[in-house]
Length: 211
Image 1 (cartoon, rainbow, N blue to C red):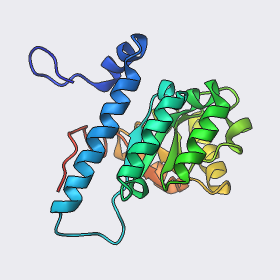
Image 2 (image 1 turned 120 degrees about the vertical axis):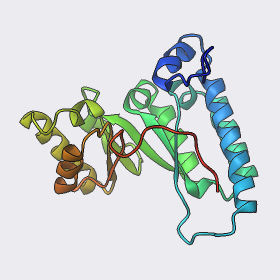
Image 3 (image 1 turned 30 degrees about the vertical axis):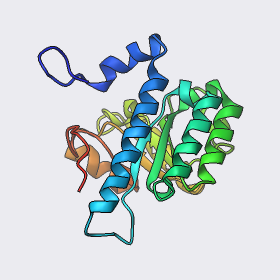
Image 4 (image 1 turned 90 degrees about the vertical axis):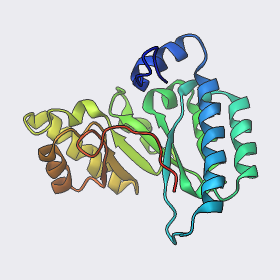
């Protein structure tokens, strides 16, 4: 989204407004439609078909996860683009999962059956995180950025990150650290065995570049 001066507005600034005015599911639908359209076009024009397909992570709002009509929309879209499902990992927040638990579990199970994967975003932000984690069928655990920021100076944060990473691995999930903004933090995460990192230390946000 751009402003009057054609400057990009960070998602963190316009998404809360979209949620407040019940527009967020429309954005999710647009993202899915635009992604799949470009995904098919890219496959047709790409000269190199990798044996290991690129994985794309797409965040979904809590409103969409709890919406039966959105689930049917997604299933229809993926049935029309059968090669895309294996390349998609949907991200849902811990808060969204808790707020409509049974629907979130069904949502994940039905889309995993089509070949999609799931990541649980902002893990650790809820008070009962570990209590329900065992029953939620996700593939990736994304450690809340509030624990990552400052973990190199704060032994408590470091211990929390180390604990989440260990439990995630015991449960067969891969872990992703959010909000990694320095090489020192990245090295610490590598030392304790976190699988992936995201954040400004890796790259600033930019538009998706298709081949």
